[in-house]
Amino acid sequence: MKTLSKTTIEFLNRSPKLFINNEWLDASSSATIPSFNPANGEEIFSIAAANEPDVNRTVEAARVAFDNKVRDMNPAKRAALIHKLAELIEQHIEPLSQLECLDNGKPISRAVADVKAAAAHLRYYAGWADKIEGSSIPVNSPNIMVYTRREALGVVGLIVPWNFPLVMAIWKLAPALACGNCCILKPAEQTSITALYLADLIKEAGFPKGMVQVLTGNGKTGSLLSHHMGINKIGFTGSTEVGKKVLEASAKSNLKKVSLELGGKSPNIIFDDADINRVHQSLLWASFYNSGQECTLGSRVYVHKSKFNEVVDELVKRTSALSMESGLANPDLGPLVSEEQVVRVVGYIDSGKNEAELLLGGNRKEGSLSHGFFVEPTIFTTSNHSATIVQEEIFGPVVNVAPFEDEEEIIAYANNSRYGLASAIWTKDISRAHKFAHRIEAGVVWINGYDLFHPAVPFGGYKESGIGREMGKSALELYTQEKSIWTNL
Ligand code: NAP
Ligand code: MG
Image 1 (cartoon, rainbow, N blue to C red):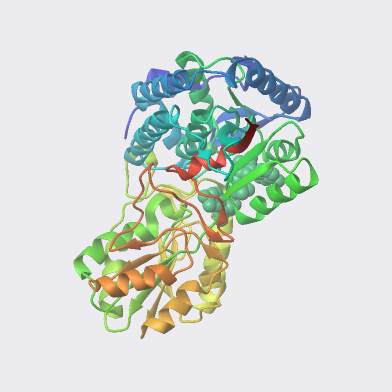
Image 2 (image 1 turned 45 degrees about the vertical axis):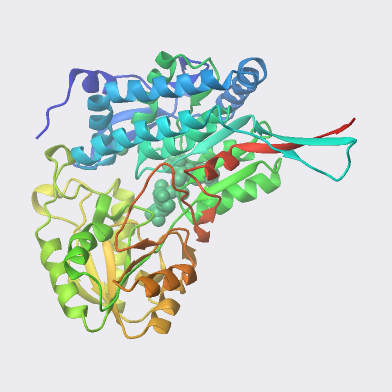
């Protein structure tokens, strides 16, 4: 079991504050929200709940910062600040990863990987900061000159979930800052600690006051941001249900821009000619990574009937061997994030028991782990494609495996979902792979792999999985607006 560093312990003793204008301030109300260690259910921290006066004050500070400093900041200076933040994150890997592990529950080695990925993401976007260009457009007249500029939006609210707390915050902060916006970050109430730690690093990196602020709170704080007339854009990751509320709030307020990265129910399709050894290695983590709390989780596994028994038997065997305990002991799987999530996931498992055959798992962990939020990795099989466990995002360690026979049948199954975030195809037939990849309704297709990510590659959803593309050059469009400037010469 990893012992906690002095810095980690000291941070956990901090009193609940909001990070406004580069200062730690008390919230207008003394109400706080507890944060629990998912490994044992103990309260480890409490956060301030930002209310309307806090949100107003923060938006005002962001607007002042934008008008006075950030709008005209030299892009090379923005790049330098973002590089500095990346460097500081790398210097603080130990406390950041320990805090993430304690707050979210994930295995410590995965938390370390998350922190490194966050730094890499920042570096990628630091590189874009001084390369955000407009264009000059010929318009059939020698007397007219037209050019475009890509300008920052202004004040942006960034609302993130609890499954990859630091990484999700950085996926939004990095492009938003590279584009020259002032950011108000709202972490999930269950996992706010690393966002607060990040705030110290933001100040140390030298960002001017008001350029990045952190407001903790619950859904009410998120809703206040989404409705705020002074905010120009919300970048949101979370559930489809709340994503729709954010869009509605925009329509009811100032038509702020909205980008949404939402849920998924991704098909992972294994054809008869797949390299089965590679499938065995990948399928386990495509199914249970982050204890299933992942928007791209391959929760609908379809296997050609000729390989079905072999693939499923091996998945059951490998899954049975996974270790599960406190994230600090670096097991294969940690707990779920909260008691609420356990109740939700177990509810889905119970409905699955009525509609499908249970092949493995199916229960909350008892015994020494019963105080924590542990749920067994669970495998169902049903060919009823409208079953609840096949249609709804469970966001826990639960997959359904189903056999299929031919290609037309499987494309229909794959696309039979309100979601369209990710997908995977396993085959050695290159024509089949690409034809299939073009027909699938999802923002990402992995051929002979799963969960491959890179900061340079766009990511986002079709259908109810979202609006807009994060990562890569695409994210610059989410955090800028284009202006056309006409000159009558
Ligand atoms: P959620 O409610 O969608 O939360 C995401 C973020 O939105 C959090 O910061 C949340 O704050 C905030 N929020 C809540 N209500 C809001 C509102 N009315 N307006 C603006 N912001 C609001 O997700 P969840 O409750 O944590 O998880 C529920 C389910 O969502 C999961 O079981 C899973 O199916 C799905 N989910 C998907 C993803 C993904 O990456 N696609 C990530 C997380 C969850 P609080 O946390 O403080 O309420
Ligand atoms: Mg927590």
